[in-house]
Length: 192
Image (cartoon, rainbow, N blue to C red; front, side, top):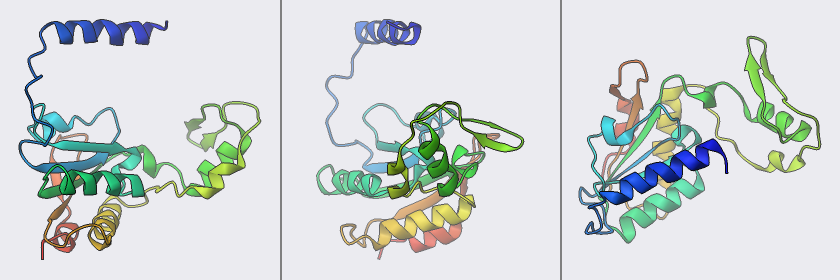
């Protein structure tokens, strides 16, 4: 076992020893969902004032409205009763540091971890890579406000998303901890 593996299991034993959340219902008590980035600096429980059982938090690279994220939001609404959704991207996001083309080139070269320096991304290993990367839309980000607007628009225009569910658009500032509204996204996401 790795050091990290052992640390996780040890932490879980401590958590389980005083666990008192077994009574929580499956539907989120506050009836909302957040789609946000997987970045380790983001703690949705803290920045949105959540306790266990309060809300659904869906995380992926960039907090993007991928097909799978929309699938999760639809399930959240249809089967578990959420009534409002937040799309929250963040400043200093790693998804701003590369393009689809860069990701495809790196993966075509090698499946090993890449590195970045002042001159850009560099492959960290020797092949083989995979040509499969060319079939994926990596949903990279060029502009945070624009990507929030795109994601809220994509969610609201999806045929399985009801028009009466509001979708709010925000950017989390990793330096201040503040949520900054993207007014254009929230306007597009208004319930109708």
